[in-house]
Amino acid sequence: MRAVVTRVSEASVLIDGQIRGEIKKGFLILLGIHVDDTEEKALWMADRICGLRVFEDENKKMNVSPKDADAQLLIVSQFTLYADVSSRRPGFTDAARPDKAIPLYELVIEECQKRGFDVQTGEFGADMKVSSVNDGPVTIIIEK
Image 1 (cartoon, rainbow, N blue to C red):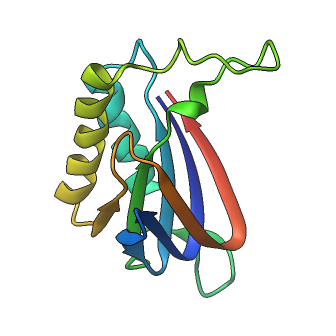
Image 2 (image 1 turned 180 degrees about the horizontal axis):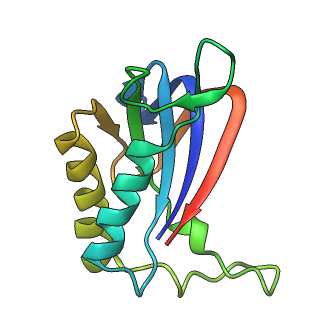
C-alpha cells in the first residue's frame, strides 16, 4: 500500500462538475492499493496517516498530529501510484483490481473515521478533478 500525503490548506474533488469531497486544513491523501496488500497493511496505513506529526507547533517545528491540529482528511483512490514505467506506456499490473482494492480503500477510510477524523473521499474508479492548495509544501510518501 502506498500513500502520497500532502498537507493542505484546502483540497477538493469534483466528479461530473459536482463537489464530492472538500476539506480545509488537513491532508490530501492519494492512496494506491497493491495486488499483495492485506487488511493488516490497511490498518497500519490508517494508523500511520492519523499519527503523522507534520503540523507546526508554536516553535514552527513539525511536531503536531493531525488530530491535535483539528485537521480533515480527503482520501482519493489512485491506482496509478503503482504504475510500471519501464516502458513509455505505463502498465498497472501491480495495482489491485477493484474487487480487492475497494474493500481495503474503504477500510482505511473507516479506520480514520474511527479515530475521530472528518474524512471526505473521491469515488473509486471515477474520473475525478482533484484540486489542492499545498501547505509548506509538505508531501510525504508512506509505504507498507
